[in-house]
Image (cartoon, rainbow, N blue to C red):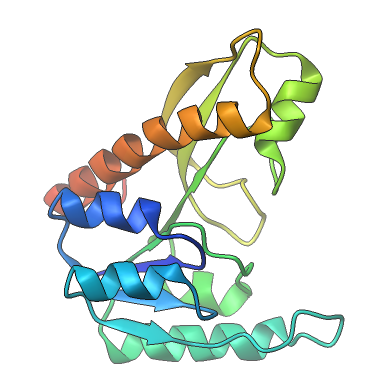
Length: 187
């Protein structure tokens, strides 16, 4: 399987994947970001499909079409979103049905969305964690592939808890992707 990683941020997840020797064929970013430097450092091809509109006029379908065309031009079989900052439209899930995966910093189905760590803290849970799941058109709603708990400590704030979740997430996501690649299929 040919693997692409879609990312928009600091690149810590990509770095963990590359350090684990996952065979990453392509890194795609939707904006100029630190991920590009991480890809370059590991000798991984990086393609920018730039999202220039972050307002109400953003055309999600047109942007998704550009992403899909880029993935298809590289014959990608599996997509791992790793801090990708743009919700993809239906065309992505039609082009790669069941082959786009994501990670989320909470134990789904609880605490979906951008603020999973904050929401878990506000709810007063004693345990949260991270989830690796199949991405679908509905955000944070696809079949769960792997989960691991992280205990909430009495003095945790959002930053400290999120950092501990990210430590677990880097290992869990990398291990899950390695298993998928070994199997040759997501499920």
